[in-house]
Length: 78
Image (cartoon, rainbow, N blue to C red; front, side, top):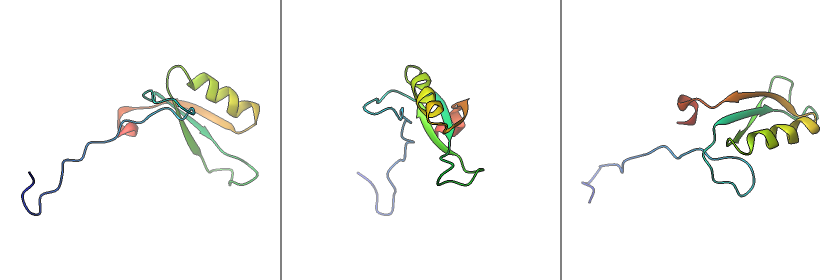
């Protein structure tokens, strides 16, 4: 039981893959933007697991939205 004024311990949530229905741990960042609605320097981020990162990248590339794929570092996943 918590003492009065004591906060519950906060644990960072594990980041998961952005692929619909996938709950696997993300390992990759896919940076993208939609030039029709975003400024050129804006970057949106999808996260991909080892299995789905290539699929997500292909999806974004085929729609001319993909900008860059980077590994997801522990600092970024916190």
